[in-house]
Length: 267
Image: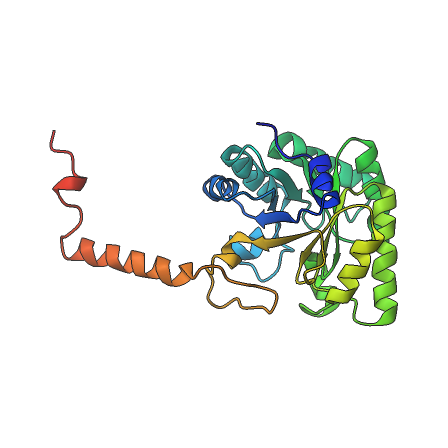
């Protein structure tokens, strides 16, 4: 079964089908996400916060992302796979971006790369696409720039900022980006950008009018009870479920109720 391609995502959007993207980081969850019917999986540099315990995505290395991309690629066959270019791998210019993106495709097994920014990364997007590497853009609240923003703040709130974001979106499309993540911007602005572009938009904290949505799997499963931003809907409360399961296991081990004969080999 071939993976969903960049053209496949664009066809879905053109046909009015919402694109379902999930961020995950390992083979087990990739298998479950595929079984649930996701169209695309993003191996995000959010792994720095979700998996590694950092406060931001900035410390994540290219080797980190490649490791997790490999795991996800082994765990599923159909979803479109995208890997994040982490901070520091493309800010130096197009040639740096090409080297990093080439490694993500060759070693990580993804079909496309995602990078953050507008006009400043257009030359990199153009070079990558000319080299045959599909690029997903990312505008709005771009996590790698959190220190520049002064925190996790909604972007595009003023008329000037909205105009700049729309111009950046057009520039990324013209440079060859096949889709665009819109994060942490007002819903009316996301609707305007989506209507103005020929490529699909995928929203997170950007309202319902994008061509698709993306959430981190750990977040939508409710695995961190401390993380409750406005944009997030938790579809399960696995934080409590995991705690209850491990507590029950610990109790049975300590009281000698596990393992039983049913869980033991007698020969």
